[in-house]
Image (spheres, helix red, strand yellow):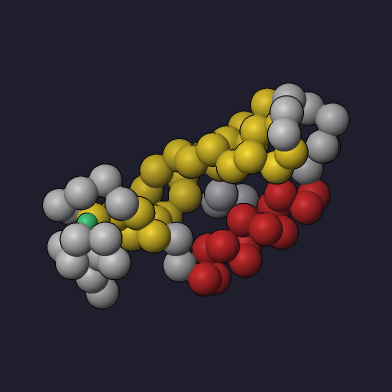
Length: 73
Ligand SMILES: [Zn+2]
């Protein structure tokens, strides 16, 4: 798999990423497995991971302005 931005090699990394769920609400998901380009800062989240993130975001308390969750349960 290569980077769609620069064609560089994508490597699997574990990182923390913020997701905006509303205009005033952000969820940080920790220990998220993503594919990151070793040439530029572009990253790609695989479909099964996106699906899981979606289900995590559905379950959170949407009244909180900032929530920090772990991807691995
Ligand atoms: Zn790249």
